[in-house]
Picture 1 (tube, protein in one colour):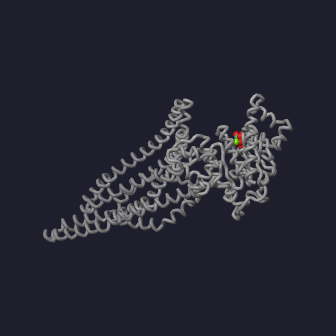
Picture 2 (cartoon, protein in one colour):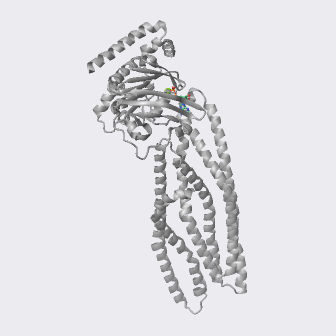
Picture 3 (tube, helix red, strand yellow):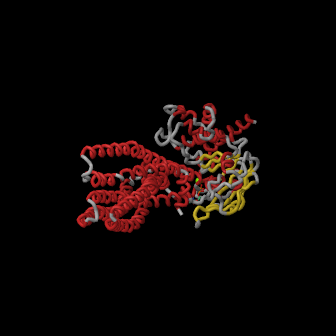
Length: 604
Ligand SMILES: Nc1ncnc2c1ncn2[C@@H]1O[C@H](COP(=O)(O)OP(=O)(O)O)[C@@H](O)[C@H]1O
Ligand SMILES: [Mg+2]
């Protein structure tokens, strides 16, 4: 099953493997001729009384010259060919697997990332794929070469003396049987061990990311205990693997050490009986000794093969994960948002037992501003996830300009949208590059203009290197509010038709929030804005406010209509804006509204 998937990768490197294989043949078979030369030297030359000493010396010199030439001119370069080509072929396969794994990461559903830790995914990418290297070396070169060497050795031995060969072969056969038996056990422990390693990696990655949190909550002790538990478990598994490996090597090595000795003892009897010449015995001894290397190489290949098989299975398991949010083969390109977005009877659940969005229907028109409000966990963010096709609804349909969302090209949809959330991810690069992500060909002026709109320009200029300051993991740390402003600048730069704001200004102080809101409102003149906000004062100006509770709309209308309704929205609003502070706050709000009105006026 797995091999069938792996085959295409190997097929692409076939030429390199063949070159490496041919190199290996020479590299192994040349040294194997040495015992035959030894036999000739001993039986045919040294003990041959018809040849004079001078003649013997001349012949030995000739043999030496030929052998040296063969070793240096053929065996040496062939060793290079073997090493280099096999290495290259293996590397190409590893590279192809890494490329495919990385591409797969981009196609995976959000669900996968919600359920798996990044460390687990990283393990596939690094450890599992690296394990393939040993496997390929074993399977695509060593095993075959060692087999050929073994067959060649056995063939030559049989030509020298058949019974002795039979003895040697049965001893070696016994070693193989033993090693094979143990390798079955090995496979199981290896699979468990590798699975556990990805759990361990997942744990470590998460703890590195959350190291600060651990300190904050003083959970270091608990973390250490957890690590201890993981390490102990992992150690038990590696110990078991090492034990099986050690037993198999111990048993096989004792046998392989004893084999030449047993064979030579039996061979000596053959020499006494006159069945074997002394030179042949020397050659025989040398060949039995040569058998040890293929046998131990083959035995040692078992763990590499076991690990490789498990790794391959894990890699292809990953590459085969079904993707549910998929683009149709003939997806309709989406060039511009024209008219409306409609949700019709949409239902969705992340987990089978908990429906998050329940039979939701609404229509949003181009150019308007909409707000979704309500208690947290109500499903507001999920609505945006469905709209951006991070997830697909279980039932019902979403249409943009009357076209089914599933029929549109995913990139097409996302190009029309700009999103800012509560928690915005910034890459480890400069501020400028992070903003430019939204429009890679934007010039510096454009980037700065966008940053100004997001009220990010001032704080960016105060950073050590201004727009070139490195941020992210290894750079300057930004506050939540600063990150939100950079994310907003991205959206301003992208200038999409639809702006999605999921508590996008939640980390800003009141003053900056109002300034940013002003920018959003300005930009929102020709845009469709969908905002989710916790602070109801920020959505007062939305054309329509949807109040979401438990995945359904319980109230909808403009701020004044909802206040007049005196329902859940009014209750929430009054809670957030208690009587005492209402006066100053409404003053601020009025000033803010004036500002917006004024700006709208100037724009018209
Ligand atoms: N990736 C997820 N996997 C499982 N449940 C989720 C996931 N994301 C959100 N939820 C659940 O879905 C519900 C709605 O979440 P969300 O849409 O984020 O609400 P809101 O944005 O209104 O606070 C919550 O009960 C939340 O626990
Ligand atoms: Mg939310």
